[in-house]
Image (tube, rainbow, N blue to C red; front, side, top):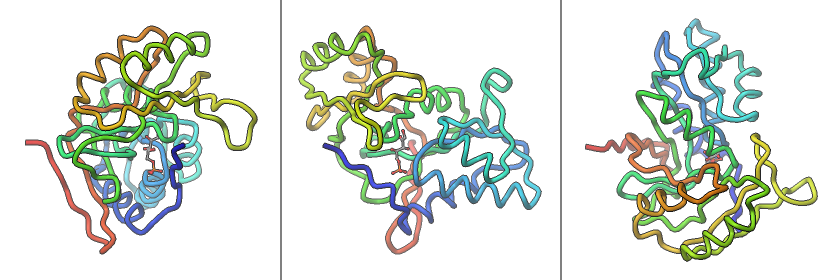
Length: 231
Ligand code: 5RP
């Protein structure tokens, strides 16, 4: 039902590189997941090679393996519970700085890392900007609670689809060992209200609605980057 493109376009590359340069010497940086942030990780690796001293906290196996490949020293939230900055991608961002994440099924750790960070920056290509969110909301679900979460999200007006794996039979299993439901709510009138309702469903580990995002960097086809900041 939802095809997420992992193709690295010029917009993704340009904005990924740009947000890497927000990281400064001595920073502990949260490293998001996805193809846009893969470009940021590559750039951060070059900066580290040139002498920048940072520590990264990855949000998935994907970003951990990429960071290791690019020589970025890593740490954990146990060792560094307060991060200076976190950079991440998103699947959709609205005009009020709400976002939907979780296309890579990594939104639980992404939200933990974002909320541990003094500064949270999202990097997207311009095609992901919308007036109002209408992308299906990824929800990480404890497997034993699947049927009750399906019932609950239907009662909230959602149409859930269990995310299935591409090169494995059956469902996607997250890095935390859970399932993902992609729930279509149509146009989301009130992201903060829906966020609260989903958070209170028993069996929901975390959902992909991020409210109050501080900064959004937007990569454009003309290779410019627009910076959007909340007042
Ligand atoms: C992973 C995410 C990603 O940041 C989001 O899906 C965007 O990915 P991409 O940069 O590949 O378009 O939330 O859980």
